[in-house]
Image (cartoon, rainbow, N blue to C red; front, side, top):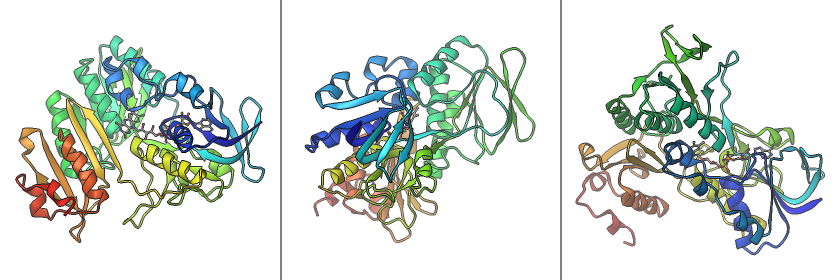
Length: 409
Ligand SMILES: Cc1cc2nc3c(=O)[nH]c(=O)nc-3n(C[C@H](O)[C@H](O)[C@H](O)COP(=O)(O)OP(=O)(O)OC[C@H]3O[C@@H](n4cnc5c(N)ncnc54)[C@H](O)[C@@H]3O)c2cc1C
């Protein structure tokens, strides 16, 4: 069997890459291989609307089933790629077939970080797939006791919010760092999010590494904190982050370093193999360090870059990273990359629930903007960052100052 392009992983990155190839006029065979069963689905609603029923299962697919037929994309689901052989330019499938390729795209994403320690008791969950979300919702609907969410990152917090407001549970958020969202948000935003959760009735346990998760009495679970405090729960969610799925790449001899290393064209250390989305580590303009991002924007933008190279119209990856989170009735959006040591300027009144945090590098250049219930300002921030236009700090903090006026000047 052969295909012009084989794409491993059919999620935000893989599906977008296949679609972008066809949009760009690519006519060779595209084989999209997915280890997951069923039609590829959006992940963001799984911790948000899908959990509450506001988003139905019908609206989860990334593309309709007819899309794959009409665009002549061979979608193979429930099949894993078990090996990549760059020398022979082929891949081995779990059904025993070998498929040769001209180009290979690794869109293998990420997987929940494995829990250290002993076997976990029943009713400890991670959230990545539609099945995981359904299992969590079913359990939440049937239990009467507390829930412990381990990890104060975005996915854990979104779940904690839903479990509190929709399922009316007693929720404990246990985080080993001294603040929530340590990796993804500024300290100023973390503080606001923590206040919201406390106001909603969630219990926060910060600077609290979890020592053990043990089976308790009957179906309960004992979550043992670093100081031997025990929280008794009927469900535990592991929101302890993800790790890039780079096994195939590593075994194939491709350069990997907490992610599959790629250049600005999403090319790996093999010129015929690309890596895109959560699994890739890539260079970013103005940053000395390479980055690995875990968001839909990055998955989709990198997919388009890889497709552009395959069709011979190479475009560099130069997108401004952005992502969003919805929790407790608030929309949080971030454009750019938050780094330690930035100067934060507040625009608007925090007490109004609609404001923004502008983050500047030490040289006065705007680096990132976090908006709270300000979608129009988020869009404007993305335009400013993309055009490398910086307001000064005084302008950023003055709600009367017309930031839009800076564009085009
Ligand atoms: C609950 C949840 C909520 C989220 N909310 C947001 C949000 O609000 N905003 C945002 O920007 N991002 C959000 N994210 C993150 C976003 O979903 C990810 O960044 C995005 O899914 C990355 O897409 P991807 O295609 O790179 O990888 P993935 O979505 O991880 O998909 C990779 C696919 O490859 C498959 N695969 C791996 N290895 C093989 C193999 N050997 N053979 C075949 N198939 C293989 C996997 O099974 C998987 O289906 C959320 C994620 C989750 C889980």
